[in-house]
Length: 639
Ligand code: CA
Image 1 (spheres, rainbow, N blue to C red):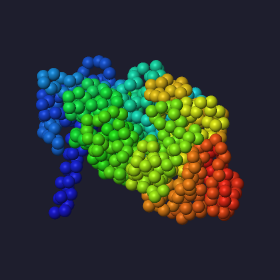
Image 2 (image 1 turned 60 degrees about the vertical axis):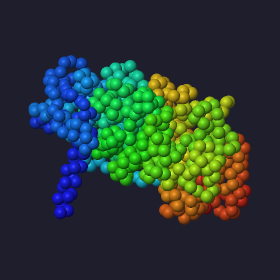
Image 3 (image 1 turned 30 degrees about the vertical axis):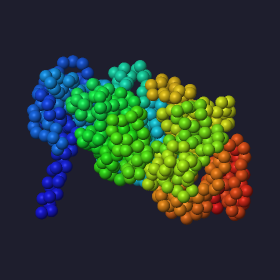
Image 4 (image 1 turned 120 degrees about the horizontal axis):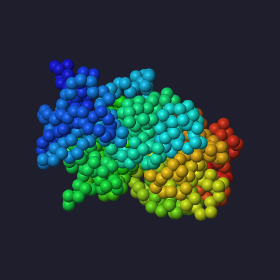
């Protein structure tokens, strides 16, 4: 009995996969095109082209209705004999007597320039040599150090000395890898790298910039980051080459995924294949806009949920992706996020923005908000609590906080230090946003002070602390990151902070030119103390398990706060954390402009961080008692 049951289950799973996410299956002898539609679709036209854009179809075929998928949507398909490799295609569905317009369809794995036509390619031929033995680095969630980067920011400036500027391939170059390794980050989180619509791939010489939150084809890499967007295989093979190089260096690859909205409604694959099925609407029939980008997808509907699940699985299987950062996760429903968690292997790290950008046409209590993270085990969210406690509120760039020496943010920082878990010494009634613990485990909280959104740290410090000197700027920058990297949450940094990047005060640089967004690598020589501190801070964290215990019970047992002072937070990580070689570790974060004093038991301590200098082997010693903490900096010592 058992083997038969298993065989049936396997076939059912195959059918589900094939039908929930329409397919193009290529072999040398034939290509099969398949899609789902709404029940009232009258016809599906397939056009075959020689090119990815322009020209007339070389063949036009009507798909045939075959049956229904598991959700009851009609399935259509066509088998074209002969070798179609190198050809392009569009699908066009007729409803109410009218064709809705050509598109690449729901299941395109390869596309032509600008993603308007699907491409028939042999996916196997896009694998770089050795791809079959590519393995994901073995790094547990508690050990991750996330580095958020944009392909163009990272490499575009001449000072990067990278050859493939603004391309996936830049990250495969030894200079790029060496920088990441020296810094010590072990996961790159790449801003949208799927095919997005806002940069014209046929005119890359215009050097147009965009973050890429304008999804067009979810299952295809962006052409603008390839060396040849006209060649459908280029973006795919170069993306894989990048992943392979990072994996070889022990660095995970995390994708920023934006399933919450599409570039537009009418031009989207969703709307052209299945009108209104993928988007949420308000009571009055207008489209809801919880994304703030003109529309909001309906993850709560099975067809969209299946689409998301199949899409992330595809990125893992085809591209060996190690994690996903969900843009506006608060637009998606909890059930879908949990379905995604369940569908992916445990080593895939999942986190997101636990908020939306507008109100959603779905009950708030069912959405993937930060406050609901405790209903989504194995999924993390960004902590705006610690971010804003350090730098000031997102709503006003000129408002300062802890880093400016202001009192009142201590409890929010303590919450960030323990990873937003329940802790007997954290009074959530005094936390800025979250009035109760919102994680089950500390690895469900992303600890950070800056990301691509809003001002980068340098700009924020300048905007919120008028007249700040360069010395003060550096001190506070390093203090902020010390809070981030001594948190039991998962630390996250914006690329370029290690070079003291600025964006000339631009708050929302989503389409600003390279001159605003680029990293200036000469800063590494101008401010060597910044990179030194960042890299030593990261090494300190990685070398000492006490800083990333990864377990709520252990954090409650070992992290003990000293009495807070105005703009000063201090804690001890008690000896005995699993794997920890040091004894008691004391961390003091002093945001004030004055030297402060903390009282600790007398003993023989080694100071490893003081006055913006870090050395794990020891800078100095102290015998405890009343210990002085220099202004605007962190102090770390242990016995
Ligand atoms: Ca594109």
